[in-house]
Image 1 (cartoon, rainbow, N blue to C red):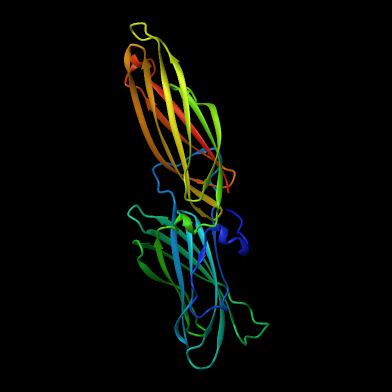
Image 2 (image 1 turned 90 degrees about the vertical axis):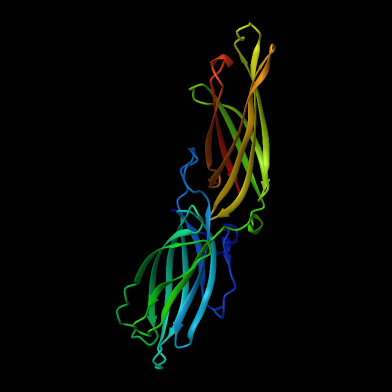
Length: 327
């Protein structure tokens, strides 16, 4: 699990704090935790990749009525855990004037749903101090609540976080899942990439061919074109021939959260069997993928292109792309 960043670095991590309603003196901290995937591993396939925008409004109920402690927003990668820390003081509802200071620590784990929205797991720990309690009294054990809910896109749900026996006050979270921030909301200016391409013939392991450096503005594309010519055996008539390979790789950084970066990858190109005595036989391809990168980490993706038959002089070409980002 990654180290919690200090408050001063929150803006760079992609968090946003909404306007607090009448609670400017209350402390709040929202950070994202989560172990980065190991380096040099292929990108995951078949699962949902990306982030969920989680909006949490903390609601208090005490002698003052129902009021908002504040609203916090974070883009959390699916399956990672965000930590929300919130403080509030509850006043007893019986008129005795008892005050209870409550520190909440909530762990929030969203999982993106295929149709939008998310499944959300919350575990909340509440530590309390009642004003006027004797200093020698034994401190109370933290109150822990757990909840698991399914939310449609932009559906709101109220989840109880703490119920006080001392003041009869309550704290709850109003939660909502949505789409992550647009690229223009990030404070990351540029991302520097190293793009490596390796190629393998048939079932052979891909071998390194080229390496390029790219720089992309956040939310903007950076692309590079790779081109290779491979000599093939003569065709059935004895004419010379070769395979022309072109692939264009486009990288677009789209979201930064919790010290990790989401990058959209597009690979387009064509392999063509070129002969002196026959029209070229072409094999176009177009592949889209999404990678999640930590700084300095390399993530890979594989791409296979097949010929139309053995009479072309080749059967299969394997490409392996490695993407490393610095941000």
